[in-house]
Length: 231
Image (tube, rainbow, N blue to C red; front, side, top):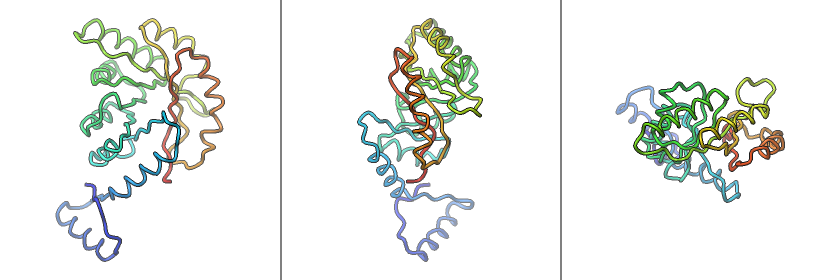
């Protein structure tokens, strides 16, 4: 549940907690909706670039009530699994406001993701890219209504010790695969850890990422990941 407001009086909070435990049982997690909205506003105002879009990673907390707060704040949703997408749709997010960045989907899972109407996907390997394009073409041939054009992004490998992500050496093949499906690689995504307040985590690699982006003729967006720490 989300608690909209808690008066900051310790005894009252203890009394309220005891009442809630009697109603809902234990264990029980209570969130302050006002503080969450303040944090969302703080982060949103901190970045002035007008085309910035913020997405909450539901893998960090899948509470439907919390997801609705992000949705009502005009944030999008970042999904790591089909289950994350399902929760987001049930929380009221439009499929077009959900970005999928995950790994190891099989045919049925990829078809489900596209069937839900998700159009922005960051794929972390050539094999996942090829699968996405194959499913897209299959659906175009077998479905009465065609899927919208996809925004295909590539998750970059920007760390020497990481085994996940594509490198610039894969780009020619990636462009060839997407072109054959009538699609384009339009975005780049990179992951630099979760809960960090160090801007250097991003600035240390941004020049290299932008240099790679210049090699993509249809580049449109850059997806910074993972998540910001508490401001």
